[in-house]
Image 1 (cartoon, rainbow over the protein chains, first blue to last red):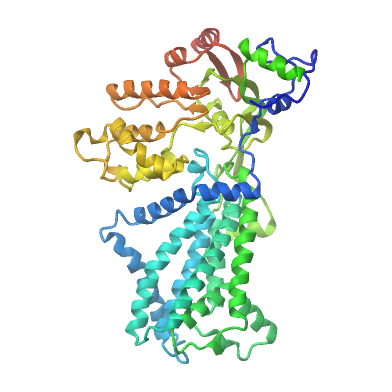
Image 2: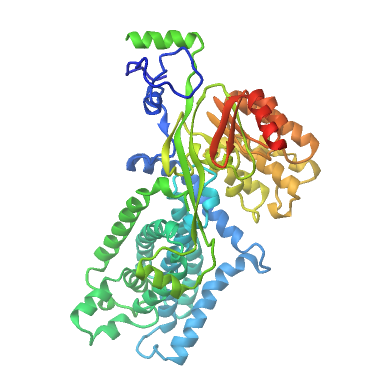
Length: 312
Length: 266
């Protein structure tokens, strides 16, 4: 029980509550709440307390994302095999169009590993954003029924996409090996690159979860924006080739593009013909910077509206 | 100091300690897609560019200025016709729906009894028990401890090993039993029970009523939404009657239910 700090104002306006012989009579609801240590229900916790709550719910976040992943294909006859088939078919479609029909592969050695890396890494960011948009608005039932830090949802969808990507990476490694690449120490660079990209994606997912929670039109609009982003990120062509004749500011802008940064890092890690000279300058600094900016910024931006998410 | 003393002595005399204070609460829902309109991506783009609100959003003023104070040890029934704002108000007390206006103060974290939204039909019962427990904020250790208890209570395994089958293969009664068993595994300070919990066969209904009574004992304050006046009479000592989002009456069970029955007979 909290200690009593205020004096009771006797003779003040009586509450509508049944009269009781207690010093509570005449206290306003807010004063009464303070006297008995009641807190405003659903109030937004402080940033640090929020991080703490989120940490307490880490088991829920991981369980929720794995559950979603394994529930995904349970009704398909091929079942979990689709987790591998989907990225493979995606890569095959892009190879058919860009490799064979449009012949962008001319100047790119090891085109298939190059293309598949680009497609998988970009898909990770793309699907994190797309499912981030629906992370709150598509789970309103859950948000309105149970209590948990809402950032659990965008983080869980990012984790879901990460699990999907790890399966794709297995496929990718098999493809890369199949095209005659030999494992080298540089493959280990894939780990920090993926980690940074995951933080970046989680941040984006949180930003879009908040935006998508009250702009329901966003889900319709995002595929366009993401497709444009994909074509600008050098997924199916070599950026350094296309940029050689471009004006300086265009080159700088395109090199800052976070998707391109993460894609190029992964290519640099896995493909030996993709050399450091093809990487934009300060590429690791860019990768860390984008991860921090999106991760921290997205988290704070999401937290600011924490108490509003049930409204829909 | 003097206040401290008087508060203490008052408590000994049976002073009532408030656990939930609702102060002039208003809740407004926004419903999208209420009207007809173009829902394609280009229309969405042009609306975003023009900074126009969507034409088909409707506001529903579900709760209009409700105030009351609930005390420790009370069991409060909520009655009113369908759509009168009972469940909405419970959600606001639980802090799940932000109020448009007014405030809700609570002791600890009030919880709605129910985990339906967190469960996934494509997963096995076993995984749903774990997922549901985690969603309610239990730790993995707590779930491991209570797992067998939950499964036994649900009676899912009485007729063979059903817990390892996906929940979509359960009959509606079995699924409801499992959902209730998971939800009732955790005790709460302020417990809110929405109607239609007594599902399943007769035997399970009895068991779940018993469990609710246990939960009530553990909880400080209980809210019960029900259309069954008998179950309200059995469990509650105070009743709030809501109609169209407005608090019509607040008082002892018999009085309010009598008035409510008289009104609904008209």
